[in-house]
Image (cartoon, rainbow, N blue to C red; front, side, top):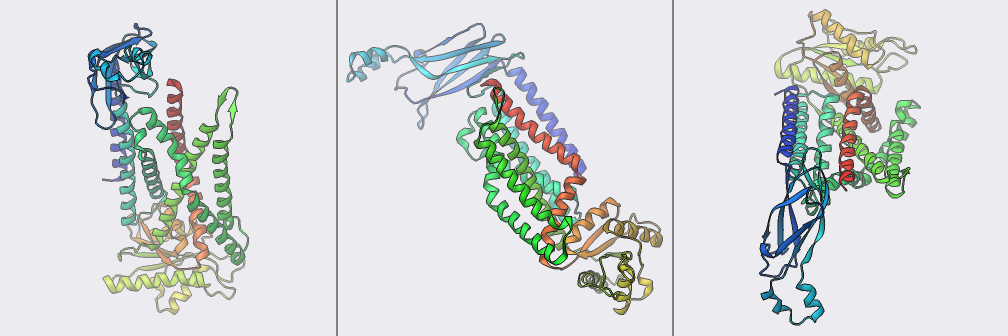
Amino acid sequence: MSFKKRFIALAVFFAVMIIGTVIYCLTTGGDCTITMIHTGFPEGVTEENISYTIDDPSVAEVKNFRIVPNEIIGSTVEVTFHALKQGETKATLFYTIPPELMEDYDQYDDETKEMMSKPLSMMPTLSLRVNMFGTLIETNDLTFNGWLLIEIEILGSMVLLALVMMISFIQSMIRGRFSYSTVAFGGVALYCAFIFVLSAYDMQYMNTFRGFLFNISDSGFWFVILTAPFMLAFASAIAVSNLWLLRHEGYRPQNMLGIGLAVAWVLGLAAVMYTNIHLISVGDIALSRDVSYSLAYVLSFLECMLLSTVACTFLAAKYKPPHNKEYLMILGCCIRDDGTLTPILKGRVDAAIRFVREQFADTGKHAKFIPSGGQGADEVISEAEAMKRYLIEQGYPEEQIIKEDKSVNTFQNILFSRQKIEEDAGSAKDVKAAFATTNYHVFRGYVLSKKHDLDAQGISAKTKWYFYPNAFLREFAGLLVDKKWSVLLLILLILLGYTFGVHLLKMVH
């Protein structure tokens, strides 16, 4: 199943699940069963010894209750309330020690025995609210009919979404279909998996819907805290690699992306910690925790996207295309003053030659070279011409080489090479192509090939280590720019989900 069909099926499933849950809660929400844990019941107390008071009996009534023995925590009382009309009220349950059990308390003084002979309150007092839909909610623990179903569905949805995204990510890896969509698959899968684990790890808070919502709201913050040491080391390493890059390659804005990331991440972490510690308020509304946790959710999401970008960039360079290629583009870069290849460009051409030789040995199938690159203002010949001369020196005939010498950047490398393929093959639609470039640049080639609707896979050539980290950030920045509306939509959905949960907690508090 393609990702598009898988995504549509997932969306339909979520829609049906949400509609079904809403219908279930609305149709059965008039009753609410609450479990009250009580460890002080003496043996012999029965339902006949339990009584209750409701401040406003016109809002809700007790439908039934029962005592459920428990060997670990003592007895629990399950009481079911029934909604009568919209409004709020409080309910208190009492139990009375039967007279025949009072003899067990002879060691107490008369005042204590007199107190114990009266109805004893089971804490806490229950706060009941009936909303406009007739749903009865106990607002202390946010208990209502269907809360456990919603809890299971939220956690199950995280697991299902993580699995679907991870399957799509793995399929893209296996098929050699690297793109920004692949990054999104991996990033969302990681995000859902981490949030699920951090939401469900503390099971003692999972027995109430309020505790469950608190677990979820805390998960983004704890994700940022737990990953802080790793991210600090990663940001530091990226910044150091940028210093090496600046030293060896000179100043360019793109050569400072690592330093920019390090500064941005430190500022983001500082903002999360500052707003969590210091009180920030607007009027009478305290916003400190909400701002901190909202920032943490966004920061943790971007961290997952960055990790997925690193994985995709690395795996794209390691992927070995099948030996079925008809055309092999060689993406150009600067040449020497005498028109010969620089080590980085020679590495790309050598990687292309090695692949063509391996393919011929494996399948007997030749592939045509397309050296791609125009002539810069400081270059004596075009990059394509320099590569063509080198290929001829290696024994390849001119008829196996299609020169593309007009492009000035990677975008045009792919675009103009595609045009050359169309001129030679008549159409580029069903052509099997590949491109050779340096390892840190392979993922960029995949992205641009997809933009130009060209089925091409990358062949990697090695280079200096300090180029690699900057490629992670370039592609991460490219993801944010190229998929800006999708990323903004995901961030908006994350913030809306968190805001809804927080509002729900505050509304019923």
